Length: 380
Image (cartoon, rainbow, N blue to C red):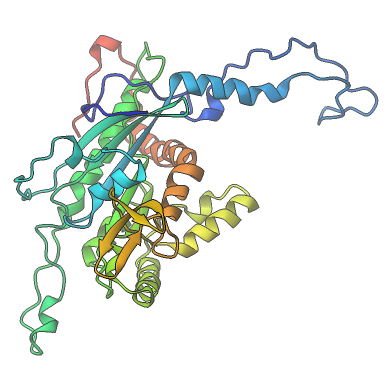
């Protein structure tokens, strides 16, 4: 069951945010399971652990966490960045199998491309299998649309004219400002004398960066954006509209983009230094080797071999969105939602937010606690 309601990007309350560390693992105060009393481990036992002589009920903590999470739900805030026409709205609708994008929530067809980057957010409440999620989609219309950094003239004129002006240095700044404003809101709530039971979490947990399927190279704007903001937010680069390239072109382009990102010093999620153990490293290495994922989005169904599938119909057949032989959408969905969603939230809180918090408190000499009625939203 999925219900969508338009909500401001700075909501006053939310169903989500479990525990102080904002992850499932920190949500339980830990009340007893079976009521068993602690027992001595006997001669074989030690302070470091030993063999239990009877059932205690420690394993019920997982069920306790599950029940509490089912009641409270959680937040997930995802930002999409890329110039218009790359299918950002369609891909989000495909990922969450619902009309969750900004365009699906009242976007006007005659809306003009803004001259500067705007930040627009809309929230939806999604429920699946009894688990509630408040999904906030943060869109950035105008990004890259007023900047032409491509050497288009090489295709039509062997004698190049003067090079076009470089991209504006401030093109990514409104987005960086928005990300930091959400950290500031959270920080202000944390230092309140009377804190809310659950602090509203509007922090951006993931930024999907849409790369145009040119087959040539990244724009300078692409590199600048990801390089400047990779230390503030979890950036996941993806190649949009992958069905416009052949399989060979796609593989070559993926390799070229990976090399350019490495040479440009761009770090994207999942970063190697965040791997907690060998199992994490093994799983994340497979994801890193596949980056950037080449995806296709579609919320339309077609009949293929007797089955209804999501896809894009062409003169040569149907490009099946969830078919791994056609594109890497299924890999993106599994990675983003089914295996790493909680890790994205934890890295946001434990790494990106903590980095902002440390710099903010150090640079300000510490924030003084304020009463709830004195709290004001930051406008950095």
